[in-house]
Length: 133
Image (cartoon, rainbow, N blue to C red; front, side, top):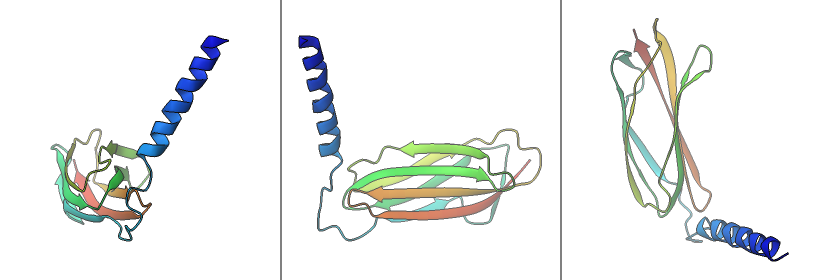
C-alpha cells in the first residue's frame, strides 16, 4: 500500500513539474518567433555527395520547440528529421548538417522548419532545393 502511494505521489510530482515548466512564460507575448533560414537557399542545386549545411537564426521572448525536416518531393519519404533543443531560449543559432544517402538521381527535396514559443505562436518556413548525385 505504501509503495502504491509513493509511486502515485512521484507520478503526480513529475506531471506537475512538466506542466509548470512548459506554461506560458509571458502572457503579454503577442509576437510569433522570428525565423531566418540562411542556408540552404531556396532552389539551390547541391551535390548529394557532400553535407547540406542548414543555418539560420530564431529569436523570441521564450522559445519552446523547433523541428527541421527534409522530405523527398517525389515520394514524401523523410530524409532528415530533427527536434532541436530551444526550450526557454531567446536567441538560437541554427547550425545543423545533413548528409544525403542513396541519392542516385536528381532529387527535388523540401526542408520544413517549424518553431513555436510558449505563448503557442508558431512560425513555419520551407526551402526547396535539389540534390544531384
